[in-house]
Image (cartoon, rainbow, N blue to C red; front, side, top):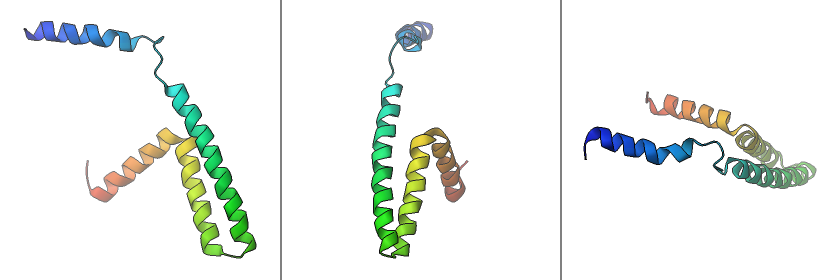
Length: 95
């Protein structure tokens, strides 16, 4: 098989993927992230209230930090992923 025939067959196979009517599951993924994230944040809030009344400040601040991280991952996941990739690049020294 020649190179141009191979390229033509790959383009032919990839053409249905470019169709905007083909479901990708992105909406379902967003829905699951929001539902699971809201449940997780509700659990963190309830536990944080308990730590506040017991005056367990370290646990309370840990739950607040976890809530901020989870909220960022759920409600701004693309931006958070880009920030984490940039941080990893900075730490690892990669380009």
